[in-house]
Image (cartoon, rainbow, N blue to C red; front, side, top):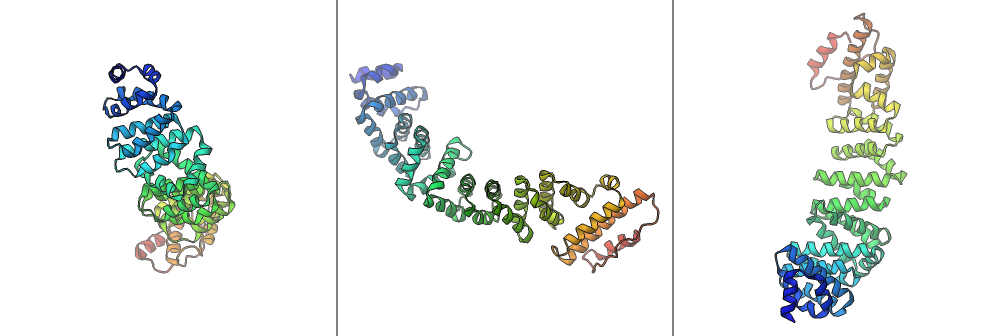
Length: 389
């Protein structure tokens, strides 16, 4: 019979192997060590078909995950278990995530995803039942899969579990705060965004300070998702942008407010529009454009873009009023030195617009500048004197 089974395997006769039932299992499993994928594939399918109805075959596949020393055999048995879709294999597959071979662990993760797809509710309940160690093992394994479908499915599954399981939620927060892997931090931030629980906001805002730009970006996206359903998150982002000194935090808060698109953020975005950091300033300008609020767009074109064409169309008086309003808005936001620099920049812009609008007629009376000497004092004052201010 062994010779007959060998011939069937060489000829790729899957149906005939399945008909032989349990007696074929013993012969097929060792042959999973083959490196020829086209031969291996139908053998795995045959094993799965047999083990669906043969309890002995099913238990043998689980045993091989633990005891077999050949990585191809272990991976093949895992794939067969994935095709079967029986939740009883989950425990052994998760335990196998401790295997030192990455290819084996990947096969186990794929099998877990396939099993989960057959009964998502049952899979999630089982993960909770197995305990927090299992959740931690799944999170640790995510760093090896980058942008794969496996990773995305596990992230979504962990998020769904954490919506009802407080321990899983707390693990995600802790891993975002403390894990050294930037991949894992990104995945935890994604999961927290999917969960949408406002309790994660503080940790996510702290994540905007992370040294890795991709982690900061993931935290920002998660904050956007939470803010869509939680007004307090929107307000916290506004206050953080207004009061924080951290450039990365300001940059991503502005970006998040732009993606949320709520007009209530326009005021603070206008205030920070002339931040000393060009990236923060640009982020605020883009956010105002995304929100598309008339007042925000107006300030963006005058204060940030310094569009002479827009100012000429708007008119001298309204342009002058916009500049005065902006200087009033920021008087408590920036240092005196920075406000002085902004005044110089905007008054020079205004002078250019005025000259074009009045065909070089004498400049109308402007508010007196009270600017203490700046680092670039002589150069700035020379320009001011040259335009009669």
